[in-house]
Image 1 (tube, rainbow, N blue to C red):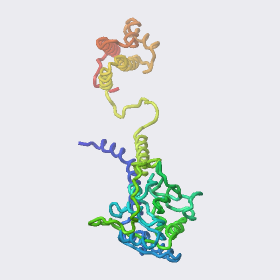
Image 2 (image 1 turned 60 degrees about the vertical axis):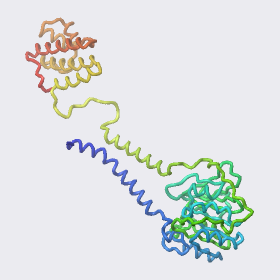
Image 3 (image 1 turned 90 degrees about the vertical axis):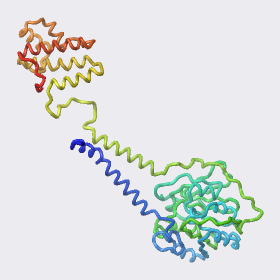
Image 4 (image 1 turned 120 degrees about the vertical axis):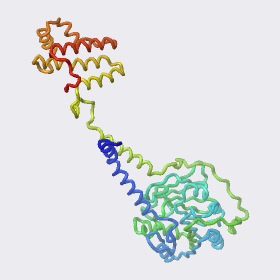
Length: 410
């Protein structure tokens, strides 16, 4: 049965952690609520209204003279690129919803086509291009400047740094990196691939922030036709895979590059570091709350009155377990000296220079023997410890004229 004291101690341990857990729970919940879901029908849809839609972006693109064609099937979208003779942009807001293996077909599209992929993960990047890999992912989208060497856009700082991309080791293609790795471009197999590290520049809610709108327009208006692949659920795999009609017959599928990113993507999410750091801070807070003081141990009065014999016996058992005969005997001697001094009307902390002559006058014993009993060297055996303890008890009983009461309080 748990006592009230034990319950209070448990609460003292738990209470400092509760605010930290509440803060972590609030942060995770707020992040999940604010994060857009690609399965939402309005998510980056050319006719989608609401904070995550892209209807406003589509209107601005049409105002620039871009023809927008919307498709909900990737095979149909790929086929529509054939007649454009490369003067088209394929916009894929949800690359994770393409059916298995479909990203490999991107390299077989007509030459000069621009392919814009929104926040593809490491596996999707590996399937689409050979020279680029995902190198990291942030908890939330960050803002970065375009970079002096970026020729992909003229936009200013934009919120595009959530997933970062970098050039793979031993890659042959030239990789153009912008916005601190949040936006990269690579030309492979005659196509222009653009990887965007966040959906924020295309979302209506974020369009007015920083230079997001200008960046989205530059990425999607480079060609006269925009093929918008509007997917909000994973495509079913066709019954019988067929060769895409836009694939060139004289084109051989390239071999996959087995190289790894220069830095290598971390297997752990970026937020894990801050969670661990927060838990360590909470642990330190609990330690400080539980500790009564910092520094070396100091003697304190017991919270309750305990019989001196009981205290000495308890310490004696502990000392015996570690064979600490000297400290055990010194505990008994300290108690005896204090009681002898009180019996002789002397201060409790009286030293040997005063206590021993007073004891000689009372008992008539040899001062050297009294000094050996009260201040002698530590015992070397258990028997010697027992003999010294008996001598101390007899001396105290003789001087105080009463037997040592085991129940007497200190």
